[in-house]
Amino acid sequence: MHYYSLNEYLRSRFGEPVYKLSLNGGMTCPNRDGTLGTRGCIFCSSGGSGEFAASADLDINSQIDSAKSLVIGKTKAEKFIAYFQPFTNTYAEVSYLEKLFMQAIQRDDICALSIATRPDCLENDKIQLLSRLNKIKPVFVELGLQTIHSRTAHYIRRGYELCVFDKAVSNLKAIGVNVVVHLILGLPGESREDMLKSVSYVAHSGADGIKLQLLHLLKGTDLASDYEKKPFHILSLDEYAELICECIELLPKDMVVHRITGDGDKKLLIEPKWSGNKRLVLNTINKALRERNVEQGSRF
Ligand code: SF4
Image (cartoon, rainbow, N blue to C red; front, side, top):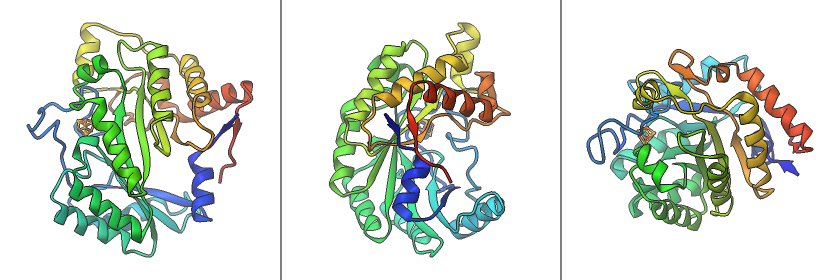
């Protein structure tokens, strides 16, 4: 059994270390602007799940320069992926999106675009734009699915049905972009079997990559209020490490694992408290993977 890490994939795809720069395209999302709701998904912080992205007040070139200056010395990378992270990064007119993405993609130090979005914000004109961009440099589209279970999707106020996700994956695969699916592990009311069913669904969806994100209970979210009123089970680190191993065992060997933890803002984190210690989390998961003889790809 082999765990195909993002680092291993990036090295084989680009032939050198590359580093992701979180950028802010200045968009909102239909769960926040009143189209589908105003309070967002139940777990989402006011930063739109992108606390580490640069400020949208800066233009894209300035954001890239500023993000690069922050990582100098931390990485050997000379090429970067422009990662449009917070909110829904295809939730705007195509003319706006084209100008925004072209600014990034035209730079010599940017080797790819990564665009986080929702499956219900990928109309045909946006698919065509992504197809044009993908002919210039590789495009990764990250879809926030979180779960395949409709009762959980309803509770978290995701705002679209599973068939919308299926259609988006099929449209994106048809134009050759790389599809990455984001799932959350530890959502209230979901059993281990429920979570593994979601992973298995993604494994057979046609997606190229998966992001496994531990649920972070963040201050100021409606999920935190629900937890205060009626606490639900929070995964322990050992439970999470075991779960990650089981998830990885369900994946096709060529599916890239983009993430096995999460990067929550420590200032906002309520639970699980252990998740704030990233080194401990990774060491525990790596130990659990070794115990199950899951071979890990080389790292930079
Ligand atoms: S998780 Fe994404 S879709 Fe949900 S409210 Fe936050 S930004 Fe919007």
